[in-house]
Image (cartoon, rainbow over all chains, first blue to last red; front, side):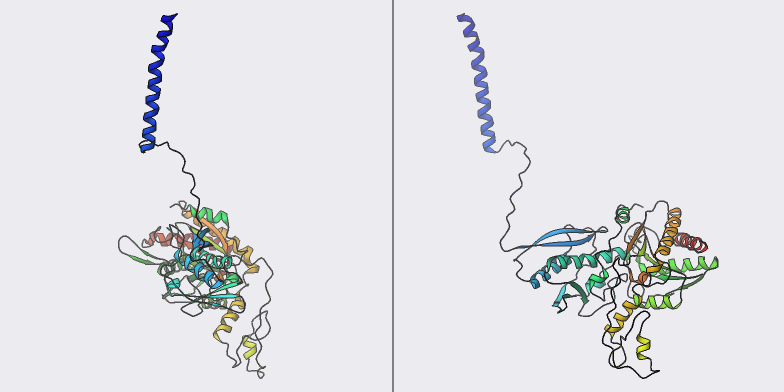
Length: 204
Length: 235
């Protein structure tokens, strides 16, 4: 009986020592950074700066209007700020833009709030001269501009584009731009999704 | 059958511009004109009467185009452009679903003496009143407004026929270029809105996707389009 107990002790002690040694080694490695368990990264809580605001933007991309939320700082205080920020964000284009539907180099010159609820946006010549797209791209360029302003600027009912202070007939020769955009890119003018989907994956 | 063909862009308005790897600068305005001329030749050979809105490299605005085309009362209108993609795009006008809003009529100036015609010449079909300024001559803004409302909704009764024409065009182009996608879209396009006849805007693949320096490309597209027009005309 004694012999049997001493044999189980001789087996149990090395196993216990081995487990202890392993635990100590793992603890050391974990604390020293030499070993990390792969875990899905927990989403970092987004700090929302108090001096910033959000804008909902509509960008023409690949035959569609894509929405993006943009943070602007300092915070928007009035509708003039909102209009200026929305226009500048629109002209900057969407994140990681690969399809340059928005003409490069275009700048905001002036803004006017008409008494009739129309926001007059005076853009630099580049908005016209650097546009080289097709009919759908031009339509989405103007529709995205209109939607981005109507969504973010309170108290306006329509948007009118001027180039270098002047009314122009068209940006790219397909769509009129000499009237407030609400009439020219009306909300019921839904482009056929099937057609666009067909176009988006165009192959040779 | 009188067919109006509108080669897109022209003059300082180049349309899509593509700088090819071999150093060629291809402007859409030139390709549009080459395609339109080839289509016109094929159609004339088939017995159709054709007129082109421009036959040289010159600028025409949208209103100028609508005026020129409307004056000839075409049976069919085709505007020729290039797309930014590898696909053919066929567009038909999208008219507003809501009832047409009443045309705003600016304050009428004092009635002119009979025969001077200031009010009469400035009154558009279906409208009343005058859009001229106090001097009898319309200001540029009034002229733009008049142009806009004069032509805005003329396409409405012809939409079913325009869709049939687009369908014929789609079939013909698909047969001629089986490797290319052909899409159909309806968006508000003023050049089509203004046409009092079946009207379609065709965009051929962009110059980065199709070699327009090859005469076979131009003649192939022209043949497909002319075939569709002749088939539609017979039907």
